[in-house]
Length: 320
Image (tube, rainbow, N blue to C red):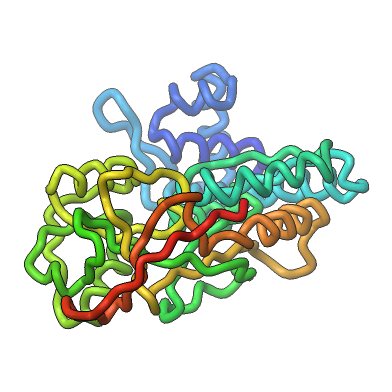
């Protein structure tokens, strides 16, 4: 019989690849962690860890079981939170993973709504890119993943349920006003996370070229600073520009290019009351996702515009 405690120990060891760090996380002694691992090996009849120099490494069997252990432990934690939240939303915790631009815009607005409507509900936040957030959701480490995806992206794996809560426009970030993608066929580009980079390549290929990605950064502040310094050009979503906007770079909206914002949950419906409350708050908070901070001037231009195309300068007001 596999013990939940033993599985929790194995999952912690796998995360840290260290008995010492696992013991610190679990508030166990090192001998206690080693004892639990030995008991688990005895129960399974296979070797799960092996020593490598002064450290340890999971065997293939250990890695297989550790992956399942993380999912099992996560699901038990999720069930505990769901049960607590079931009691009239007077208590409970919802764990939410999202990327930085969402955490600095949508999520704070949703958190304020929840604090007022359900003061006993605790919202625990984690900064993760979409792929990592969905993996945590599958493993039961979070209850909601706020992610972005593109309209033509492959459908997520079975088990995920996606609630479309808004669209986020994409902007060309450069030093020129009234700019277009066609002006930067031979420019150096600044790439970001995997999904952001796929997005960049897609919009550029629609214009008939593949961008030369010379620099990489996921940080919206860094990207805009590099553009201001003439290091390259980039694309950024509207949420990123709501979170941070330099006055010495220009933002040109690429009409027809946007990312979809989804709140993802995992497993069969219905959602627990606490999770449903978070989803409702996120939906309400995404109403202004197509806006940029007050007094930010942007240029509206088609993603397939040519350099001679006339652009329309507009000022969008953030309704948050």
